[in-house]
Image (cartoon, rainbow, N blue to C red):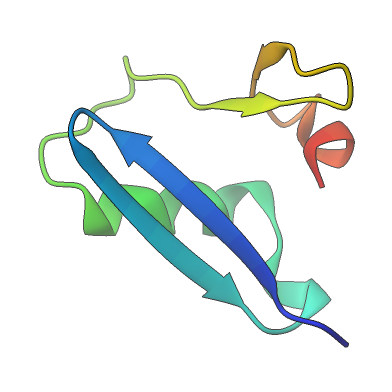
Length: 68
């Protein structure tokens, strides 16, 4: 399987996270990885992703399968 790279932008920082297996690609794992690597993030922050129509969408448990 090809690893999945998740690129996260926060302010002027850009970080890439590599997930090797499908089991690693869960909503909770992605959220905890991002929070562990970007200091100062709270639950009030939201994550967005670009969909196939290039729209920015909020990443939630309900939309997670659309993003990945």
